[in-house]
Image (cartoon, one colour):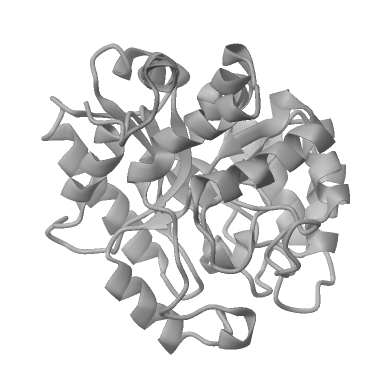
Length: 333
């Protein structure tokens, strides 16, 4: 296995650790031609990914359901290398078999439109975390790119139902007031699946220290992403990402930090989407074809960079995946 010129100590630690990337995107296609790209994650020593099946507004319930069905079908027929992760035990079993475990996320439940029963349907499809909002206000609450009036009455029902069925709540892309309302109305670990600290890069998609604190208080995990506009100066070097990781560790503690690179396979499709949906991703905030994203091949270098900062092996294992596995054990049913 090629670990891209990292030291033998880093290679050994990376290969022995559970490595969990909490946010990966694939373009939707009926023939699943993009699914083979996940091999890049597996070859990078990643053991578990959360794969988005619904992103910004307008995806629709039908597309979400068909995407989940297609992804599950493909995973089942490539079981020599991949395993659907419906329980934490699936993740643990996949690693020694050199398989990549895969579960799903929904990044915007705005199409629920008052139908609370969709939460359990999504869970049955394999969705294990769901964001509240995707940048813009929806039926659940306010987004990070609009005025935020807080969690709606239906939003409160949604988070209670997510707690009941065992789905992790995520506040990435969510407005400040709505996110705080979520933390105030649950006793379950709640996460930021792919968010970076506002204190290091002033961008409305990044999160202030008070939200980092609230996430840690819930028992949750802040997973840091590899998007240049959120890291600063469009810099996606692993050392830059690790600077953000270290900030959250110092703020919240080692138990509350993970990784959610947010790499988007089919980058050309992403650039087209960014151009066509300025209301969701305004170019004035740095969204556009020049927006860099850290590639999955660089994930092993995160281990190397953490070692350079004198993190212990146990601490690195927690960041790479054990913290998110703990949340899964506490929340998933």
